Amino acid sequence: MASSLLRTTPAVRAGLRAVSKPAVAMASTSFVRGKATLPDLPYDYGALEPAISGKIMELHHSKHHQTYVNGFNAAVEALSEAQAKNDSKAAAAQAPALNFHGGGHINHSLFWENLAPNGKGGGGEPAGKLSTAITEDFGSFDNLKKQTNAALAGIQGSGWAWLVKDKTSGTLSVVTRPNQDPITGNLEPLLGIDAWEHAYYLQYENRKVEYFSAIWDVINWGTVAKRFEK
Ligand SMILES: [Fe+2]
View 1: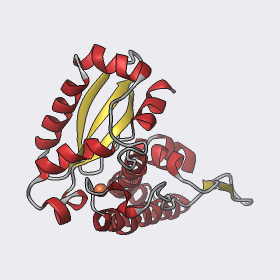
View 2: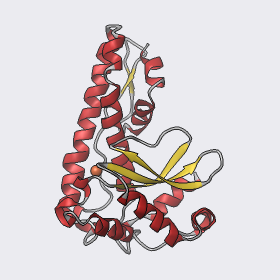
View 3: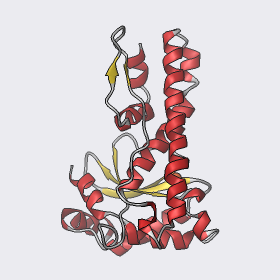
């Protein structure tokens, strides 16, 4: 059954939630299908300068993210074909691609929403309940930034740092994930920062600490607060 296989794969579950076109039920089967698509950015590619250059944003969104979208759709299609043939081995073989490309699509979709032009929703400090929670769990907003930057600097190879909320306790913490592994399980991702070289190298070269410092100027705390309060 397609549905039981999909239920067992967190990346697929999350990926299908991220599918931006309405799912269409096939008339001949109960299989629900949809294609993931590249989301539009709510700002221009150059709007995050000088923190992130327009060229990086253009490549990152239109090329890198598009590749994850394409890879995820291809893996979902391959999974579907394997299921149609009752080929469990071929279906299971799609797991790495589903996790990588599905995670890449999910993570970048969250990332674009986490950013906004400085002074137009980006930068500054969190407010309201989110601010209170950050003070309770990190001591101060500055400590949150320090912990996040330390986590980002400690990533070996490619990965992400995330501010997450424990769904049971509501507690905030900073975690890292390698490659494109998405945040799953009992953690709700509130804010993700992409530490892949493709996110900064064209502008910052090997000075990734400068990128990690500058990105706070374009963090959209309104989006983070909405995710925190939902
Ligand atoms: Fe990226």
